[in-house]
Length: 398
Image (cartoon, rainbow, N blue to C red):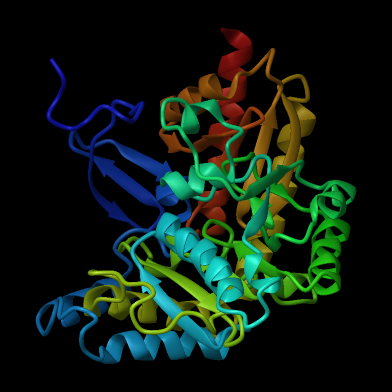
């Protein structure tokens, strides 16, 4: 008999009843160090007092009014994002998948609204192997290479050119008269914590400029301070036209956003898109509190320092267990530990980390994701490395 909750997840047998900072507590009183952070969502840890204060205060005043009316909290958060980024305008939604769907719609609307009939035919979007843009039909059509995501859900939507991540020559060869945009995760998350090289990402920008294409960055997982800057594009020396954001922006409250320049959003006029819950007063109150913490003087500098400290400790771990660990990669506090697939399948290593009361997240390429809260302490970073060391030792002893 099918359980009351649809069985679409392979869940670990753990039940948590509360969280505090970098720690989660089970219903039977066990304590776990959380280096998954809800898959890069709980950017300020659990029950952060500023986020709790924002949520409780707003909950006593107003939860939902719909986007038929002006929402002051929404306008305030949009202004904070505009002031801190390349964007001129923001659309709020509830998730990363919704943000990516809008980005793809915005690309097509941008070109279809062009006065030139030849330019108005542009609709194809170049995407990349290993990317993850969500689980809607549009999102899985954009990245059809993963059988787990696409099998049984066809026919997929046309209009995407799916290319090897990092191959600029393939991108240039794929660009044609119907190409509308290039869409990329600058640091792939589900794909195994793979940062695009500077050469590749800057090359995409150059090709977009040369061929008059829109450039879309999916920073759902790598954004909101995760890599040491508010958004990863800041480290590259150029700006995208459209950027998708979610996960960390709500600090645990369901919230997404699609940011764009005025030019890229020119087709998005009344009636072209909407969301019942997107940008509701509760979500935007929490999002504003997240932005306030992220932009406090010194906060992101501390993220960079902690990332450097953790990478150093992980390098020592690699030296100790080079028969199990092949590589440590990533950016900021978005770190991937790639294990040897023969000696240390990542599923085994995640389970052995559970045994040490540490939560991590698996990804492609036999990689374990380490995504701690950005305000994690040095002591907790040391504890995490200790847990991974113990997991490796347990694997060798098995």
